[in-house]
Every structure is written in structure tokens, then in C-alpha cells.
Image (spheres, helix red, strand yellow):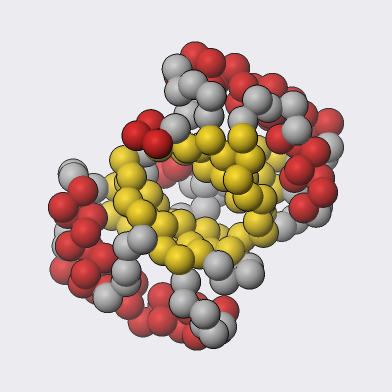
Amino acid sequence: MPLYLVEATLPEIAAETVKAELTQLAEAASQQQAVLIEAQVAPSDRKIFVIVEAASESVAQATVQPSPWAIAAIKQVRLIGQDPRTNPDRKTEANYLVEWDLPAGLTMETYLQRKAEKTPLYAQVPEVQFERTYVCEDLSKCLCFYDGPDEAAVRRAREVVGAPIDRLAAIETIS
């Protein structure tokens, strides 16, 4: 089944409240034959990034309808890197999110080729671990998740692979 990114703003970021809302979302997903894969919160700007496995965008939309969140976008995405479905221990390792607004005219083939060529360069910044990327199928942006000691290290890792940063935030996994 396809994966969908649900990007939203939270009315509040209290961990207990967000956990309760995610429990309701997981139940709603189950009723729609969908699955909540992961949820990451950027407390600095009260944003939540949820990945839902669903048969269609309308099913993903129905899954998040019960939430009090201000939904900014629901987009089909492609996963590159550690799959939290097959490697659930890794999903809690990400502590930084880089958003990159992809340039117009970029094709998925070109993006994937560049990603494959550049990913080995992360070894030059061993203190940062690239975890996974969700690239929007419409190529509007990608969300790259990292495990790193600090923001400066994540910036160095992005520089090594020659990838821009449009937004960078510390994140917390909510499960």
C-alpha cells in the first residue's frame, strides 16, 4: 500500500495529549484498513509529521479527520532508507528533520540516482546517521530524518552530500 505524509500543526504539544490523539488516529486508521507507521513532532514550531500506510489519499484523509490538528498537507511519499515497518527500533533514533523544497523540473529518476550516488558520502560525518527520507511523489519536497548529536553536525552532513536545507528542526518520536 502507498505511504502518505500528513503534515499538521498541533494545538498543543504536551506529550500525553499528542499520544492520546495518535492512539485515536491509529484506531481510525485501523477502521479504514490503514496503518499509522510513525509520528514525529517538531516542538519548536508545533508541527507533527505522520506517515500513514493507506490504500488512497482519501483513506489517509479519513484517517486523520478525527484529529484536532490543522492539516497543512497530505501527500503520497516514497520511502528511502531505514523502513520503520521492518526495523521499528530505528524509528525512534531520528532526532533531526531536514525539509528540502525540491527544485522545479527534478524527476524522481534523477532524484533517486543522485541520492544513491551521494548517500555513501555520509560516512565522512560519522557522528551523524542518515535514517530515512520520505520524498513526495509530486516532487514538491523531501523530509530527511537523521540521528545526530546537534544541529551543526546535521548541517555538516548535508554539506558533505551537497544537499540544501530549507528547514531544520529537532524532533521527537511520539509512540
